[in-house]
Image 1: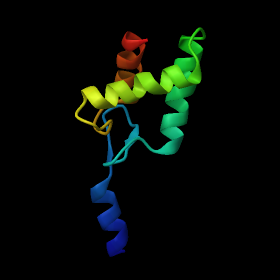
Image 2 (image 1 turned 90 degrees about the vertical axis):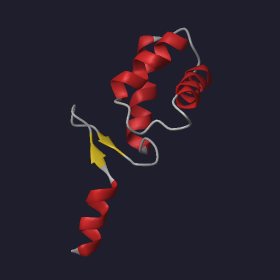
Image 3 (image 1 turned 120 degrees about the vertical axis):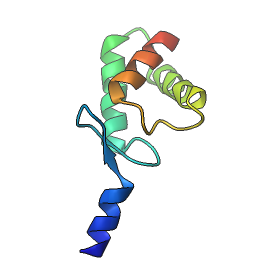
Length: 80
């Protein structure tokens, strides 16, 4: 029970209801983000899209946590 309480205080759910890890996007969220960006920007390779997401991370002081996935998608689209 205590471990569950500790886990719930270490993670958060942003206002749009998307789980955000305190350290980084979880793998399923990252995969979903990349898929959405690939659909939105079919002319770019997966590597180019990943680089754009990494640039968003760099601009945001090295982390993606705290940003909504839609916000990351918009920022990465602007870079692409």
